[in-house]
Length: 402
Image (cartoon, rainbow, N blue to C red; front, top):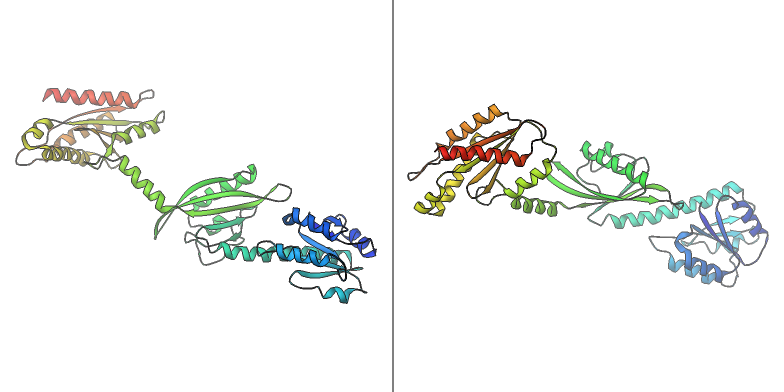
């Protein structure tokens, strides 16, 4: 219910008429002193929707009340003033009409007309203030929007190019109407419903991809509450965090990549194993591989030759591995591969293929020699750590046989 402050200096027929007219329609705060009204406004200015002043002509203190409201009003918040008058004083009171005083209520006007006039005045001033505020928001690089309880856009400060028609208004439309990505539209819908039900805000990241490239957007949402504390909508801000996210990806990629060979390192293997705990898709084959004679290569030809020898091993293994496999350099000359959907029989053939490819890597001084072993997880209860030990055991068995 809208709050109306009503300033008058003495009880009279106009005051009685207005109180009876507004009863039950607005929360009216009548004060019979301009000084007391100024004090009320000072304490509760933004909680009051309109101020009505009874017949201001030649009333002591009223001009100071006008000046106070004029100073407090701004482009972000405007308190509209309406004057209560009658036929006898209407001409004098009309002199006060201005940008500050927006209209008159005449004693005897029909009740419904008065009520609608006050509501229209509040609505107009609120929308005018919001229009100025929205122009300011459009100067910000972030996207700010408001939705109603049905997920329809009420306001959006800027358009973004991940919409189907970025140059058209999205007011009254939902995410499914405007977004190119149905997946991100569904994420938006679910988060909106969660906020409306819980009354709590949330933050999440989305990834947008189109012909212009990849963008990462951080979405921060909060519920809009009405005066009774009920959720009436959602306000959100979208920040483009692509640069920082790409930097994070680059740093993470460096942290999980072996510097010499460019394949994954032990750190990433342990990270993947932790993610797969209790959720292994079987069959899963592990391939262990080790360079034979690396120390001799280093001693005879130097560490640069040794590095080349290790890279030969990487290439030979990658030549044989299927595309969905992951290869890790576990340290020194040791490699480990995770190969999903590979049976024991296929794993044995893969080991043979690696050894065949290894024969093709050689220089005038040396040729690549590898020891390779495999182990396949094909039943519940087996764990990756045991599989690693199993493939290492097979690899060392081959190494001893050389």
